[in-house]
Image 1 (spheres, rainbow, N blue to C red):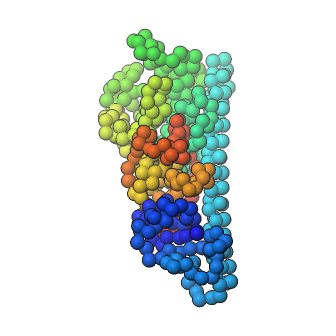
Image 2 (image 1 turned 60 degrees about the vertical axis):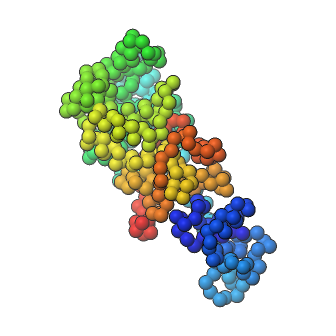
Image 3 (image 1 turned 135 degrees about the horizontal axis):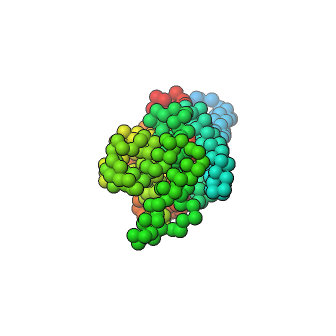
Length: 411
């Protein structure tokens, strides 16, 4: 029997209010709710349940005393429309995700072209980088409000994921801080090129010599930017991407106002990305964990204005965070509207819905369904872990935010 519960989300444990009863456990849960009746949809139920008589305790989905034939037609039409809307919504979600994946992958390919040409043809490398950054800045500024979207696992060329991810998030943060097109362009150039000095460098070990070799990538990245004929602003931001406001960074141990705004942005975003996507041998944090550690333990390392804007933009639960909702369901945050970050969009674990058909729920439009807490991956039951498939690598891109409808705006 396909039913609808005419109570709010906080008053029942099911992830959706309309669903087909498929197990004894669901029936037992329904009994525990103490409802006098639930609404059912004959045309969506199994054939033997489509008769004209009401089942005891179950109300057909009609409010009019019309004939049975008319009632069934009305129910069928309404439910078919709802199912069609769900399919259309899922299709749109997949299309938007595919477009974001493609944009990110194209960006990683352009970055690899920069790596291939920077040594022998620095001017060509600059042109590749200019096109990459200009396209992203133009799209970002045309979007108005942007949604920060978690991308699919393994999207893009692995070597280029970090610089492109840092560029995307840095541009979003720069826009949130009021930067205009020329400033964003210089920030984007610095962000995507900040680790170019690691080209050909072996993985860093733990000896003092290894540490010195690793820290030397900053100067090498600046040298590449110099060869490409990039501005002082770009070179300075690259030089400062490992500096910290409390003087604990390198190579110059700058403090506070010694750093320029692009360098402050790049230092924070680079640090955040490395916490979520560390090098081999270091345990990755979820985006919520990384943000919490930065705010609680490392706040003094970053400019307070930049850090505050970053937290407002990413939300308490950035995309990629694993959470538990107030109805105890497990979920993964898949996107955040940068202008309304406290109520993200999530995919909810529901074993009754195939994983590839799981809808994205907009918590902005569901005030009764909030997030109770963030979870470590180790806290997820195995079935929820397999269903939600938390990303081993966190990558982001942005899309245009769709203006909320009347109901969502009211919520």
